[in-house]
Image 1 (cartoon, helix red, strand yellow):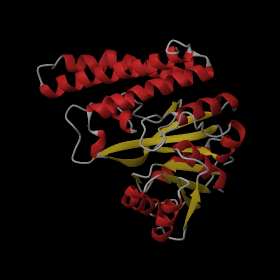
Image 2 (cartoon, one colour):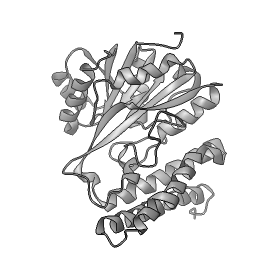
Image 3 (cartoon, one colour):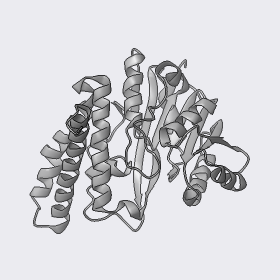
Image 4 (cartoon, one colour):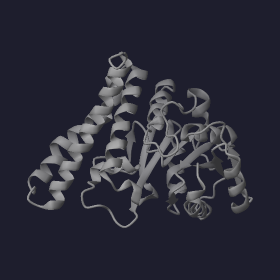
Length: 312
């Protein structure tokens, strides 16, 4: 069919030597795909020692590219600029792909209207999931969360750890915004959300699909198992969402967030209130409320700051 393609570039980016084992595991999973990618591109922050480290350890069939600047958005954009595939897929450096990940994702491009595909991101917790960490909050660690569609669906944007786009999308709609994306260990994000909204707005009749059969497994380190991280990531999410709202000047672009909040109010919170006498349910309820307050605080801080409330 006109929309099909098997020529896929896969982009991985990393900013540290500390994740070498994770990067190696990720690359190994990509080389074991049922559908062989045309190329695997490893993008590094522009640090000479980082380049030398990975050159000595990564096989020659993996292309190594240096980003033009620090940060995840710059790295993804460097990957796009150096990729040759008709479809460009992205996976995090601390994730591994199911053997049918690429095959199941690419099948969706048989529809020529599909410009992007997101898949399921399953959390793999080091040392086990904290009892207080509700599945509704898995977005905090970059994974598919409870309340997200459970079946193949049209979505506004994919999760960055497991996404792909036709390469033509970036020529038509532009690249990822570097002022929104992550830099090192900071907790900002949502550059894929902004890019997806922009792409579907600029390409008439286009759509983005979520296919849960396209699975990657995302490692969640022990450093993310704290209330401090929950607050930091949630607050940053609020800031990022405010920036997106400013960019598009329409509340409809944050419709997904409204649906998610409605799910929490109608399902997630009541289900725990009914069993609040159980420690697990009570602690999860409190952390859901804690995260929600942090998101709202981040959103408000950006809105007030942009209007000059914080200026002296």
